[in-house]
Length: 215
Image (cartoon, rainbow, N blue to C red; front, side, top):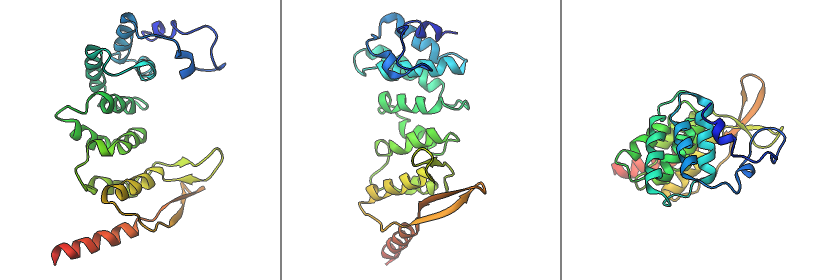
């Protein structure tokens, strides 16, 4: 694999017994040769190569130090933007946020990412909403009211619809208002309890705004 050349640069003594961590990359320098290997990995058709390429560059990249590499990296990331492979799209979005905010279609790409099938991609785009949203714009966030991404609050803890909650918090920031939120609860896949904030206060606010507009 192409990524083997990247892995070979790591110290023999790893921070952990299993896998590769960010600590293992400490002390590495983005040389010309490493940049070439990273770009080749990201441009690969092998998902493992792609993921390793992104992992290395996300730990080592300092935007602006090498504008040509930044440009090549952005182009390579955009080539993978429509991937259906899990665990890649969110890395593409990270590079887009970091290097591509001046692109003419940046907003279009990020709005599309908000509805991506990969929940990690949706999460990344949601957290960067302020970078592409129009002033006071909340309509793209309403989609998340029924988002099905579930995560644990802590190891062995209860489940939450994380993106539903994050989107509601983002709406509060966008409109400059804090809702009196209450938790709703349900059963996820017939087994575990899952919690999320009730969006009804938002809907009540929205209706009141429409009434004012009509008047």
